Amino acid sequence: MDEEIFNMTIRKFLKEVGVTAQREIETAVREALRGGRLQGTEKLGATMTLEIGSLRFTHVVNGQIDLA
Image 1 (spheres, helix red, strand yellow):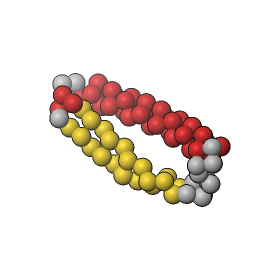
Image 2: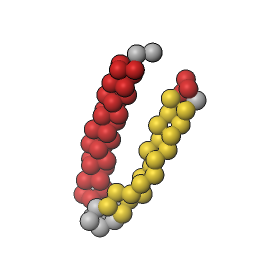
Image 3: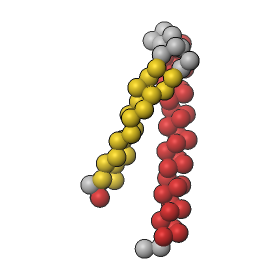
Image 4: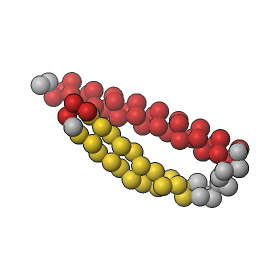
């Protein structure tokens, strides 16, 4: 295994996950605010699940997103 390539592709994948996840969360929150489903002061519980099926690997991260 080439450690440099391995680490570089992990970083690239995680950057893509972070960028796209942030964009999707922002879109969902703005739509919920416009639709009246959120008021803008909530604390939103969030869960991110990473799976690599061929490794039978799952990693779950729980957190909170504060709107105010």
